[in-house]
Image 1: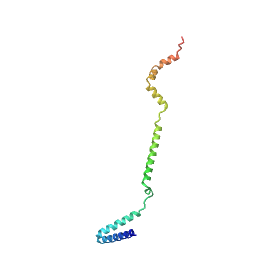
Image 2: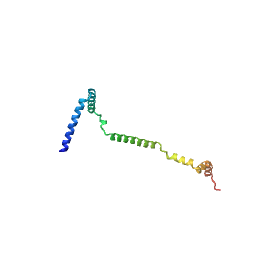
Image 3: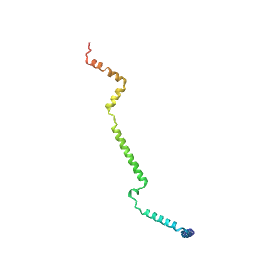
Image 4: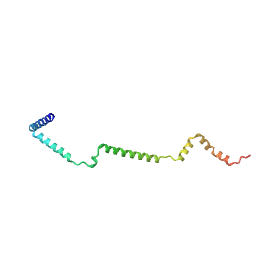
Length: 120
C-alpha cells in the first residue's frame, strides 16, 4: 500500500507543478503548445492507406522476392537464347585441331585415292 500512496503523492505533486507552470507560462507559448497538441491529435485521426499498414519487413520481403524472381527468369531466358548448337561445337573442334586441318588441306588427294582403283 505504500507504493500506491507514493504513486498517488507523486501524481498529485506532478499535477500541482504542471498547473503552476501553466499559470506562469507566457500566453503566446501556451497558444503554440495547444496548437501543437491539436495538430498531433489530428495526425492520429488521419486514415492510413491499406498498403502502408503492412509491416516494413513484409513489404521489403516482397520486394526482394520480386527482384529474385525477375533475376531468375531473365537468367533462365538468357541461357536458352545463348545455347550453342552441336553442329557449331563440332565445327569449332575441327577448326581448332591442327591434325584435322592437315586432312582438309589434302582432301582432294584422299578423294582421288578413294575413287581410283589401285589393285595392281
